[in-house]
Image (cartoon, rainbow, N blue to C red):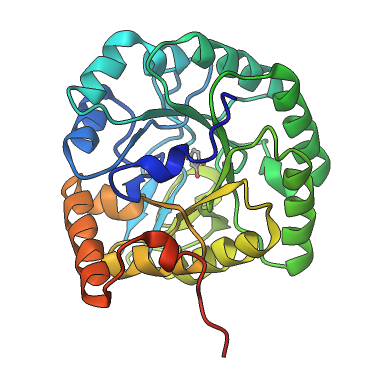
Length: 314
Ligand code: DHB
C-alpha cells in the first residue's frame, strides 16, 4: 500500500517547514534541509512559472503577518527536477514534499501525475486553501468542490502519500461537513495540513491612508502568533472528527517549543512552521526543536504518543 499512514511518525522530529516562506528555490530549501527541520516542503507550485502579485505583498509585525503573494513560483517542473531535489536534500536523506496549488483541478491532476513520475519525492501536499489568487475562491470552503477534488484524486490511484492543506473553519458545522467528506476518502487522503492563512484580512498603514500591502485592495492572508488559537482549534476539532487513519499536521502561529507541544496535545502528529521561518530564517527549526525536546525531557515524556491528543477537559 503506497499510502503509508505511519510515514509521518517516522521523522527525526515532529517539526518541519510550512509551504510558502523561504521555500521557492533550491537555495532556500537547502537551508531548511541543513537545519533541524525533519522534512523539506516546497512552495506551492503551478503548472507554469509565475511572478506573483505586485509589491508590496507581504507585511510583518511582531504579532502577525499579512501576505498576498499570488503564488510566485518556479513551476512544477522546477520543484520535481532531479537537480533541485539533490541540491535541497543534499546528504540529509530527509523526505522531500512538493506542494501544489493549480489554477484548476485539471492542472492539479497533471501536476500530481508528474510528481508521481519524479524520483525522490516523498509526498504531495495539495493546497485547497490559497486565498490570494484573484478570481479563485478558497476551494475547501466549497464542499461540493472539495468532494469533487477528492473523488478525482481517488480515481488517480497515486503512488505517493497525499495530504490536503485546508483553510481555517470557524463554525462547527463547517468542520463537520469538511470532515465527513474527507472521511469518505480515508483510503485516499493520508493526512491533512491545517491551517492555511486566515484569508482576506486587512491592515492599514499608520503612515498613509493605505493598506499595508498592495494587491487585492490590501486584503491578504493572516499568519503569525495572532493566529495560534485559530490553528489549535482546527487541529483539536479535526482530531475529534477525522478517522484515526488520517494524520493531522498542525500549522499556524508556531514559533516556540511550547507551541509545538500545544499542537501535539491537540492531536497533531507533525507541526509546520511558516511565518517564524520567514522572519528568523531556517535557524528557527534548530531553536524550536531544541525547546520542544527540552519540554519533553522536563515532563518526562518518552514517546509522543503519551501526550498526542491528550488535551484535558475541565
Ligand atoms: C499564497 C498564499 C497562500 O496562503 C497559499 O496557500 C498559496 C499561495 C501566495 O500568496 O503566494
